[in-house]
Length: 501
Image 1 (cartoon, rainbow, N blue to C red):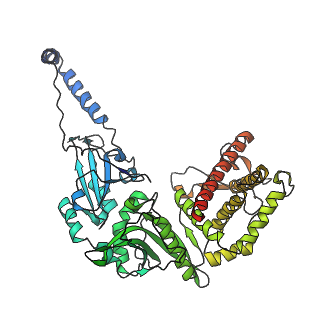
Image 2: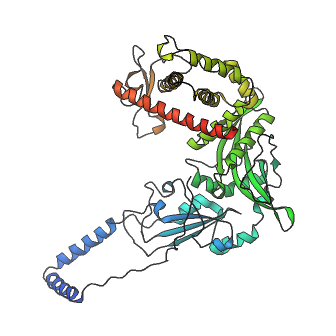
């Protein structure tokens, strides 16, 4: 997520613009108009009606992303200033009706200040004028209430929170549990100042009333910065929240100031007979602290709890591409130090060095043994899908400096895997030819599908996208997907190599 400082001057409020035409032209035009209107009164009515209709139709709406600026502030002095850290939300359109636009305003400018201490918000709206008619005037209070809820305050109360709620984070996590990290997981920041503040991860279950109160303040950040996010149910005790904080000395007290760096929400699913599966619902590092390793710290804390509580495994609900990348880097590093994996990787590497897969008549088995998959899940809490992703990373790391034939063999492995995913196959299981096709339905879109299977079990045109009948286009699509996969694996390998060097 890109964050930037906006140092431009604030927009003036309630701007008025007045234009003057040439006097002679204006008088002449008025005289001529009055003469014709006196002869044809209906013409006056027609022109007046047409003018009003065109004026109303001219309101095409304003994109909220073009007129709303959101700023992260830590002090009362920053309120009202645009010379501070600006937050770039994922998308604001879905907060403003079906077409995602704001209507009825000329010269609209909306500035939002969000406190990084208490997570209250203040919204300042300015505009030149309102225009009635057309689609009406958008009620701006409704969308901002849906984002910030009770955390939305007027300016006076908002400014007071910087003194009144100065210790909000410290007080609300006071009853939380400090997550112990392994020595290899402890966070170290080379950019830390001489005070060397203590950085911790606190774990709060929803049985703790403070956890729900805290999340009710943080949910606005989730809605603004996490794509497709929905608030969690704070009344469900199976949810818990992990909070990364930084403690800094203040007024001679070693535990004086506490800042929140980021947070994650985790849900515990029951796993028969007596275990649970941990699913990460949301993970977010606050804008002032992004790209400093705190997201990795939160993931490491969750891994630590999963191991200590003997959870079945850890999954992530609809992870973003960056989160997938971060998890792959972390888990690949963990797997490199997991001794049982080395013999299995060495066996695959030897096979790829000694054979030419393009000439093999039978598909070779280059995946991890089932027993190893289960061991990794039990000891590292890495689920099967994530392990298979990291498995390819580890193979690539051992082949990256080998000859061209080895790399071509690896490319074929990725190609077979991608093709299998497209054709709905897994672990070499033959596709049955069954397909699901969406069918338009005005009654219930969730039920708009048809399942079918061809007589001979053929994949058909849906096998590889919309151009399934065109083999050349299929091959091009497959090649492009394989190149994207290889690039992702290469990026993970580069990062892992830098972490272990």
